[in-house]
Image: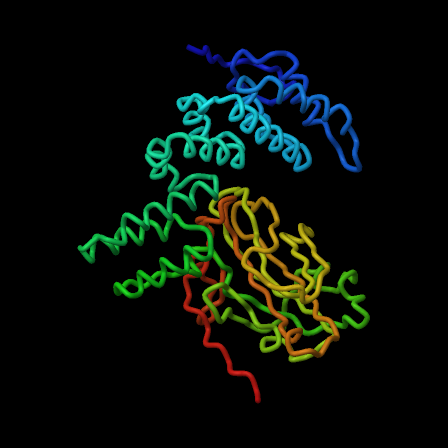
Length: 389
């Protein structure tokens, strides 16, 4: 029987303890070399030598290589993933039927590990013992790994679909809806719940900011306005700004309607969100336009790109909200192109955790002349105005 131990690696490859199987020094050195690669080919020669040493060690290097994904750069992850694939293929050619299932299970269940590495371990387990892998899926329904969570939701849906009891099926779908993060699964489960008489709130589920105040239009001729720090970026006085509310379930605010149906312009939108405590989170944006995001007066994200498409969560900013009120300021720039598909001037923004789930963050709005707080996405979307013909 193989002996598996916990080795303290003193930060040479991992910042914490890592599962290993009497890891040979050449493997540790090889992993360290792969994790040291840099841009423009820096360290590639040493990484290639290290890669060969790790792969040559075979099965003994598998879990240490997966553990090395922790805190690895994207370049290093490519090297490590390649090494894992080579180890698996090499052992297969040797006639090895699989890797220790207990070790793969333990690694997969360890939520402190890199999500991509855990998914690889799960896939290896699934290939050699489908029943054992499937038995793990219910545990991943609220997992920090988006891929494992997706697998769990899909598996849960298969079990819920044949249920004859309507209330039981509705409860099962609701549980899966609450856990789902990917748009296709969320939309599918929302549709199923509606057919059963439920009223799922996709906007609230995702934590979209739906209430905004928008500025006047500023000049963006020649696309120069993106770099210009107009007054809204330097002052907090929002007097005279107009109220704008999202019109769809995915938080979109149409600036052609809210500000001006124009080209060569930009505008700002501001909202106040209230955090119960200091909160590390993400602000995710979707827009076909060039965009900047400021949180409490500090620029935290920008992307100068026009009409290359809009998709859910296409922009992600890691931020820390202070306890209490926080100002989100979004700058959205429109270009001068007149083709119909370049007409949209819009954005959506939401506040969520790293999995894409809503947080207990509220939004401060003015209602009936008073400042009140409501949960993000709680209000129904405003009716969309029909475009002029």
